[in-house]
Length: 235
Length: 281
Image (tube, rainbow over all chains, first blue to last red; front, side, top):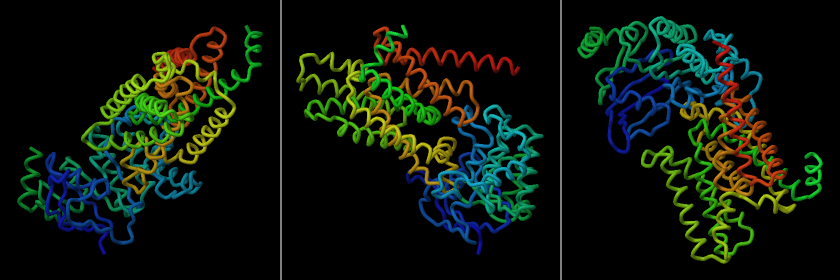
């Protein structure tokens, strides 16, 4: 069975539909990119998959024994976080919380996991630094390490490279790609960066109020909507 | 001066006041960091006005132990406030302002219409500024205060990791399977407890100071969540103790003296923070 199956999904706020008739399937090991214009319902879709919002109608099914507390999430940064006094270690460790249950303290296994995640993201030397004093790229690595602590199966990323400079963007895509290829983590990502999307992703979901395309990246390039979107953005 | 202080410490009511004052300062600073970071700095003010309204109702109804009425009302309002912040209809700050002003106005109106004492203004003033009540505590009050403080501390330690996660990133916590709503509820109930406690010390108007100043001062200097919390607790206890000792020696109002110490402390920490940044450059 697929890891995630969305069928006949209608999304929106307060009864107003922002995206309708979404039908797609994510299999284990996929790298799915969700693309579309601003306001096309991409973020709403991601929030609905994460259970932060309820769909207006339709269903989202998790397969392969995927549980709600086995999903990692890289959200867009909030205002609160900009001046939040917290060390990198504290933030990464907080990703382990979903495996804590009623235990009020972190176990040594969870601490090791956090350690390993930081090492994987190359931020081990920053462990005791203050989050708000890091650069944008470093902050994203911290949040990615936190997401890694929360999952071994599926990562959802909401514009992971927004506001990063080109060099750091390439590094970030490299990290995400290696998580997908080497660790077999399924990735679902929202991004506007069309050239990188085409390079790294295995599947594409193009949303603009309704579903314009869903399929593999190769098929997308040959489709009408894909050619138009690709051409429109890179010019 | 030391002699005078030792003289005063002979009286049980002075000892009681010191114990209660320090405990309240400690509890409010623990939660202050979370509230300031969650952009709920004014919840202390809002809830304390609600508590003031509840006190007014209690005195109209001639309920002798008004905590029994004040505590549930304040807890309910705390839960409502932390909940409305998520709905888009009325934003968090507007909801707090509405509740705060409404409760204050209605409370004063009630006290005026159904007044039993001849000195309404004096009563209101002492409820708002807590001018005298901390010096009239009996040993039962002190034990209740110690009990509630221990409760707050235990809850805080047990839920520390969850409180951190919910404060830093509620969406992430919720999305990855942590039940944020329950922890928000726990935060709301605990803050209501602390505020009802604190009403006795500084009165409803100055409670915000006890919540905000220690947290903001600690955030100037320290860089991890844990160190900020520890520093803000120490800061708050130190300022409260110093403020109370000064007010006992000089006969100044307790609440305002503590707040003055908090402001002084904040300025010192601010300068330390600035000079550290300067050195780093």
